[in-house]
Length: 237
Image (cartoon, rainbow, N blue to C red; front, side, top):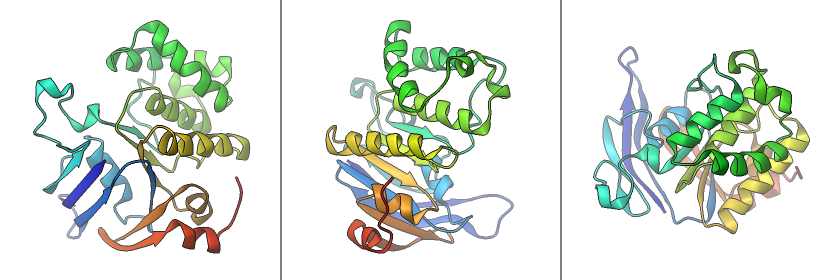
């Protein structure tokens, strides 16, 4: 379950708010679409929910626990331990390490053994058609599409309460995008996860989301039921 209450955020060199009183909730077992024009606040919202950016105001709960008030006995201490973020332009990898070394590092950071990391990475890499050669390459030498795939693998290989996806299919071919969307649907329907799926593509959102939130100028201006999107943009991935 995810509850977001009155989240606001401003940046020092901008007179406009990046987010202005954003409020919504999800009961879980749901894929929540997120859309809006460039600069609407989508990426800022995802980064706040992931614990990468602090909000200026407002609060949010994951699994019924107010983030920022977590105690040691909860087994988690921050949003970063509750949410998994796959960025459209991943910046938090170690670019001079190989892709495999990056995944091993993050696996250890998530409390996984080397064997557990390998077991989780392999089916995801197979699903996204990641070559063995790409596993061995230094991250900085990978194509944009390969970087996107490793960002998705890193997010999907960990345990999480909420999955945050920023333009996840942007650099994927049709086959990989279709496999990814099927996997995401399974995470929500069969495993009870909350997924927030940010995209500019109404066809993607129609294919995957149960409902879609629309941001404009940092404000939540509309909520579109999945049935309406599907009726307007029926398309099979």
